[in-house]
Length: 137
Image (tube, rainbow, N blue to C red; front, side, top):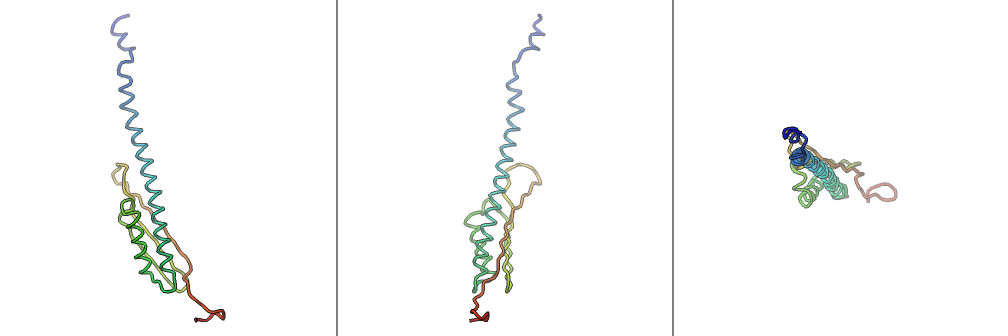
């Protein structure tokens, strides 16, 4: 067998070629997993902030502004790095209070134009104190 044919059949460099092809794909998969874990975490942060804000805004003496302040405090304490460019909206009527927290999730996966959002909404009846007869105290 000639030396040329032996060189063609040899496995020299096969590991390097496999490494060059497989490692970037594995890294991209790992980054995708981390990115979507951050999206999941950011949704939980937004939902938590909305629930905390609802608890403040729906009370007898609470206002929608009080709920917004509480949501911003919760976001600052938990998710200022994960959930960026956040916005809080609160609406309080005589019957129902609703708080919505939106934001953009920090980007780990290097894809141009990839913008992921997370939001949380909490809604509940507005609390009011009434007497047994149904009137105001």
